[in-house]
Length: 480
Image 1: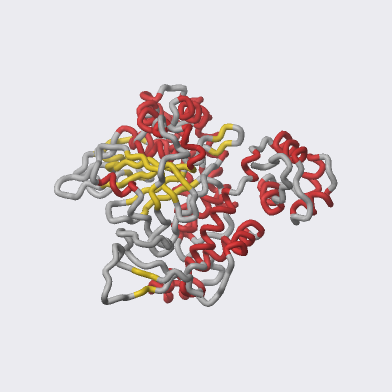
Image 2: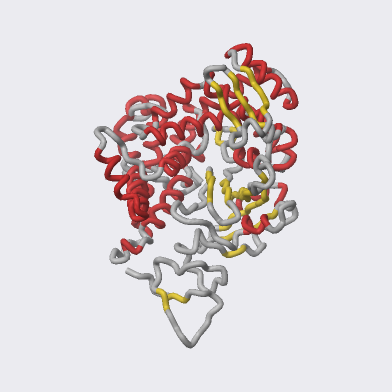
């Protein structure tokens, strides 16, 4: 923890990022902290440690949570670098893990650039070289190999917390001044009276393939009857986000730097979705309820008239300084193992270029659709997490279309699990964790019966005389 007694704290890069996020020069922050600009310069270059007094002054002067100096970002950056440099492309390079950690801490911008470059390389390797070349040839264009990953990176860079949208959402709820059960009617009235937008719930035979559509010419918001009550309120709040918070959303997008048109549009939609969730579950009320209820997702869903997935997603955004919630990570996966959503305000090392471990019981929810499953999981490096998982159904589909189903996994580091009602009665220090990996291609655990492919860091061993528990045997020595 920052400021731990008797321990010198060298946090230069993190200190610099906080200063830059505050929009201050070295001279300005030095004046605020009552020290010299030259000392700030030495701190940011890791040539001087940060003292406990400076940390306390920093927190008081700029209303910061000292956890902003914690290593969550560095852990995530290190996991990304470790995944990239595990690729066979780099097998001739003997790169010590400590050098990757040093790079993640000292040069986060370089880490991000390497991740984007590797993403572009991966997409090109999948047959998109021509598309990449065409986009790169356009004058002034910025090539993002995958706009979805680009937006995910932007969300993680902001720790999935956008204070401007939180404030706007709370102001909206204060103005409406209605209980949860009256939210849909109040939002409908606001759209009609302030923006001349009429809300209509339409039959499925009119909106066969669409759940929501805004008709700009007729000023009508059309919502399918297949959308449940919480989804309808969400769609109304989303529309209000676009019409009332457009300037705030554009300001956040502009801070992201150059984006191609696809990434920019996706980022705007994502931020409007963020506002909608914040309007349904206002920060202060939701955070207080979550703490009081020990993060009981089902009760929170009932109290705020929200779905299980909506509540889990909202829990990953509770990063307000001095009113933080448990730093959760979230995963949404289908029954084929495809990951369609992932967020992390903690340190869980999601893989950006593959699926998830089949030993994680998030996949078991499809066999037990009415049960919430809990599990302690342990990564190969010994890091332990507590997770819950449940299958959810999206808006129903007319017969005979397949009914869409997804599994939602929500988790946190084991040190936070005692705050969750789902860990009540568990001895978290002694309970045995299920050994999992990030995914098969990066996991080096031996004798796993669920392994789908050998690790890319090991040499595959083929033996005609032996059949092991795992379909793949591999050498113990890491390939160089």
